[in-house]
Length: 558
Image: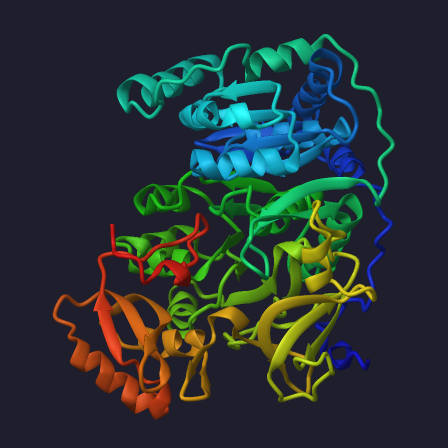
């Protein structure tokens, strides 16, 4: 296939990357720690962890896993942590010791946690005390034998550590009672590992780094097998793309999305560790007031997020103060994880002076596939061009490649594409062809320059009297109404047309009526795309990264 996008790459971006620059994520980390020993690597609640400290502490943690607990190469270690300093220490410690990391959402119910731990075969877990009671309920039906617990402030200086942990546990009462006999405290694990030697593990691109769980293209939770080669390649691909705008050893990155999610894992943690940047960790991005305080105090050059997060910031009282405090510092704002709405992108650029750079990816591709150029001056409404060493084709249902301008399924091939799903060969065969092409389940269209427009998830398409309605398009139109704060779109059964469009709206203007919204839609959408029903909500169901859960929109509001 002709890679027509290469002719339109930004200056200096190569067609191919050197995917073998690092043998593993372990090698990449050790390279950065040696190069930037005194520079902050991660900052949380004003406390900075330098690259030198990250090197030392992750070494100690890895030695504990190997020599004290007795884990072996390839054992699965689950991390059930929000964005804390402990996360990168535990992550890199496990990888340096030759283990496989299983990221776990701390908001999981006991049922969800039990499934993921049992399916992955995890034998150890690092868990925040705030959610240890959930682990207690799920533990019996899993293979977990070793538990390491941590408190929010465990890596803070002694006085700060005591104050924060006391406030979380005793004042705010955020730690329900739990009992996990034999559990080891995180700081005790570090002390135990400090007295041991970390045995060097010669990792290669073929070694598994993560079992990253996802609903994927078919909805059943599955562990995407992501190797060191997958992640090293995606970091190098991303680095090649951003190299003309950002500089090594100087950037400050706001990280509000959870690091256990693959977007923040690669785009923030792994990529910017390679770049010697300082990741400013936000534990709870839903606390918009708290996030604004951090943004006002931090001269940040990069911020990543999803559409709903940027929208919430723009609508938050006092956001203009962030622009004044940051004036001249922000270089790049990256949006991924879900489609970006034009109204949000245009308001962001008007206030902050830089566009939202939209990209596209999925867990099965480690995750980044496409991105818009960082030197873009306006919002394009597209997800951009394939990254170096990446091929993208738009195909029909029979697997035939379509011409530019035709809508079809986005298919991907490249070194970042997963090996397959953990213990699920049939599911793997559904999405991953023997030629290495990944069928994403996403609909898109490529233009003559090789830039791709995301249309929608194939499973979310609404069919009205035989015509296809893409929820993303309807949501974008509804968001253009000044009285709308948030919107979600779903199809509902209809006797006459098979399905009909229903919109779920959070008001910005309390006086907004359904009639006014429908009139706005009729003026901007073809008849069959116009919603039949409008339902107002106080809030919409979302994933931990803020993506609207369309499949849950029809559930009764809590």
